[in-house]
Image (cartoon, rainbow, N blue to C red):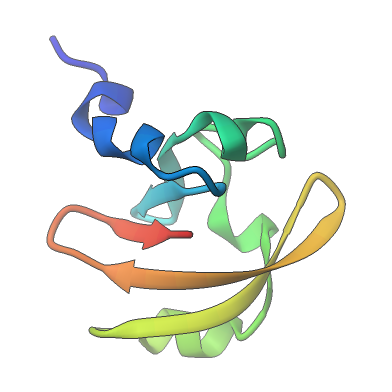
Length: 88
């Protein structure tokens, strides 16, 4: 059986921290995100520090919000796909 990490191999093509969220949990992340403590199983509620309500109501397009990773704030863009929410 294929692991979730192998379902998103393109994440490692992104040189900035990037991760995928499905059902409120991080399901895959690239090495840059893992270095900032963003690993599979992380609850997205723990890291979205601003704009939580717009994220919950987000249906399509691109959303910009603030997350906290490794104790530091970062600006992130989110794209919703059929498979997951892609944070960069």
